[in-house]
Every structure is written in C-alpha cells, then in structure tokens.
Amino acid sequence: MFKKYQLLIWYGLSLALLLALLRWMELKYLLYEHAFEVYAVFIAVFFLIIGIWLSKKLTRPKIRTEVMEKIVYRDTSLPFELNQKLVYELGISSREMEVLQLMATGLSNQEIAAQLFVSPNTIKTHLARLFEKLDVGKRVQAIEKAKRLGLIP
Amino acid sequence: MFKKYQLLIWYGLSLALLLALLRWMELKYLLYEHAFEVYAVFIAVFFLIIGIWLSKKLTRPKIRTEVMEKIVYRDTSLPFELNQKLVYELGISSREMEVLQLMATGLSNQEIAAQLFVSPNTIKTHLARLFEKLDVGKRVQAIEKAKRLGLIP
DNA sequence: ATCGGGTTCATACTTTCGGGTGATTTTAGT
DNA sequence: ACTAAAATCACCCGAAAGTATGAACCCGAT
Image (cartoon, rainbow over all chains, first blue to last red):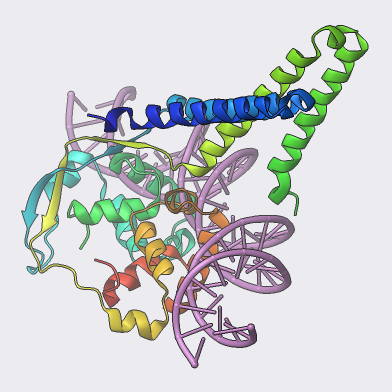
C-alpha cells in the first residue's frame, strides 16, 4: 500500500528536510549573509532531482521483439535431416544453400568464392539474398537461424 | 585522446556560452533589475541538464520485450553441460565467456557492448583475447570451435 | 519468343571486424 | 600492502562484410 508512493514520500521528506535546514539557517542569521548562495544550492538540488525524475519519466523503454516461442522438438541424436519443405517455402536456391554451408564452417567470402570458382562479389550477392530470406543481417545470425530451422547440421 | 573528455568539453562550452549570454544581458542592463531571477534560471537549467545526464548515466535502460510467436525447432538431446575444465585450461575468463555467449547469438560488438554496459572497444579486446585462446581469427570460427569444445550450447 | 528466376559479376559506398599498441583502473590473492 | 590478473578504454589501420544498384547470361515454362 505504501510501496507505491514510497518514492514520492521519500522525495517529499527530502524536500521538507531541505526546507527545515533552510529555515534553521535563516534562524541562525546565516541566510541573511549568504542568501543568494543558499537559494542557489536549494534551486540546484531541486532541479537536479527534477532532472532525474524527468529523465526517468520521459525515456521510453526500448522495445525488443523476441521471436520464436512455439517449439517443435526434434531429435538431434539422429543424423541430420534437411528441412526441404522450409527450404522451398523460404525460396532458398541450391546455390544459396551451398554458400550457406560453406559460410557456416567459418570461411570468408573470398574463401567461399575460391571454393566455388566464382567471384567474391557473387558470394556477396548470394549472401545478401540469403540474409533477406532468413530475415537476418549478419552471417552469425544466419548460421544460428539456419541451424535452428534445420537447414544445416 | 579527446574522446574521453568530449562530454566534459561539450558541457564546458555550453557553460561558457551561457555565461556569455548572461554577460550580454548584464550589459543590456536587464540583469540589474532581475539579477536573482536570471541566476536562478541559469542554475535551474544547468542542474536540470546535469540531473538528466546523471539519470541517463546511472540508470540502465528499461527494456520492454515484446514476444512474437514463431515456430522454432529445438532438439531433445541432453542438456548442455559446460566443459569447465577446458575453460580453465584455456585460461578463458568469465567476462570472455559472457562475450562469447552473446556473440554466438549473432550480436555485433556494439550490441554486446550495450548489453554489458561497456565500451565497444572493451568488447574488441575481450574478443581478441578469446580468439587468441581459441586459436581462431574470425567470430564464426570462434563460435564453431566453442560449440565443438563444449563451451557454449 | 519472352518472361521470370537463378546465377553471375561489377562498382561504389558504409559499416563492422580484427590486429596491434598502450594505458588506466579494479579485483583478487599472497 | 603489494602484486598479478582481469577488466576497462582509446586510437589507428587495413581487411572483411554488408548495402545498393545495375546488368548480363542461361534455362525452363507459358
């Protein structure tokens, strides 16, 4: 019941304390000599807190979309079996699959190109399409997703 | 060399600008009539900014996760068991393991840095050491090897 | 024959990685 | 208290990766 307003109460008390301090200093005739400084500190602290509060209030939470919740269990102790249906559904070509497999072994674009006797630019094109089809932006993500989807062992 | 103090310099310049503005107002005889108010506003704004900055610096970002349902294929094989002996033998530190795990999910250095609240440069250092310990040269190879060695699932 | 998909390649540009170096600060163990 | 390891950060550079766009060629299907 109180927890909800805990912060508010806390700030209120702090404020009250500061005011009390101010009053005390005033009574001590300190305020008359350094009125400006004291008020400055007061304002500074107050707005510091306001700033913190504002920042907390105004920053909107980053939205992170988390995918993949429906789980289909698959026994990996069995030899790898390619998910051909998914390959077709995603429209992944055979050449793209080749490149994917080689990439997953940790080869660079250049090395893949050399292995397939084509230009590195071609590999880049294949990978760009593959990334689009897998809806990823980096090779590591592509490999991770391809493994999950049963496209590579 | 300068980047380290970039923020400081920036605030310093802002402060100087504000002071210049203040001086200008003073010259315009505006300040004499409302000296206290002007200074109060000045202090208020300054500490408001400091407050916002403080809050941003000290509080970690709120993250709201949105769950999006999709199909995932998961294996029914035995649960992952970390090869702690190997971790020790290779001299891989706990922080390096953290970075390794995040990297394996396909995050970029920048994203890992954000997740761990450190600089991207730090991540690069961790990864460089990790690569050396794993005797690889690329992140994909590192992930592949780490999986083979039982360092990550 | 032509149309679309797949493969190939190029060029240009931006971003990210990885290597190397050096430095400071924290932490933990003797 | 001192030391060694771990963690942090910066800066530079070159290589690799990724993005965007355009274009040529082959091949099977309409």
